[in-house]
Length: 353
Image (cartoon, rainbow, N blue to C red):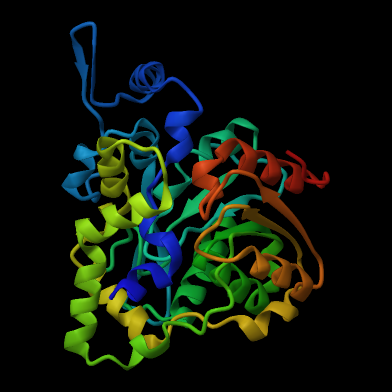
């Protein structure tokens, strides 16, 4: 069971946000966020109530992180027509406020996570003038899956393609962290016309799918997924990943990271993915033709830096940048550094910190 939790890396922590508290004065920033977007906050006796999308689980109101609350308010559902499901799938994402002439940046997320893990980096990219999308991979996040579609890798790939074809429509800079890097590679190889460049962050791309978990009887698969959802497990994973954080902060980050698990179809979708075998893209890596930026935290305790070097060698057209004093989630731990690298790579400049 611990292997199930940690074997997919710290994607359990999809909502953590270390540098949100380190990089600025949170008290002042909470007031700023409240003034800008109507966060539930009391300022000089004037209580302002957050206006969250109605489809988000009610537990969103328990979250205190101002970055997560701000981004959650912008999540919307767009119709995506797919052939393997009856009707459209109302698919969750954060849509850019404006479009521009450059190719858009499209942010994926980790295993069993949501677009909320980009809450610290997304506003930096948007403030830099990039057209930025944060999309939820089919089966995770906040899409409407009441008519449960298959959630295997092929369905996830085709759903992302249809979302791109319907709403984004231009070649994109596709960004994938951890297991999201496997999603990005699989997509880029199968739909090269949709991807201009790739950015892979602490990539989990050398694992053989869900391994023996795909052989579990259904009843045991549901038991494993129920454990995956559990608050103690996700809290423990946060405590393992980050040092020097208060218990109250860790509790809040855990609430962010498991928010999507409260949707009624989450267990079915996750079991569907597990029993399908998951992602195995090792043989696809050398087929990637797009220019690729590899970003890696130097203190990643989940995926060895040796695999970062292997990935650079295996990709035909890749450059690598390591971020010091950073673990497995650079876009969460070091949003300033990651945003700078993405901005420079998008502009065609050599990445630097």
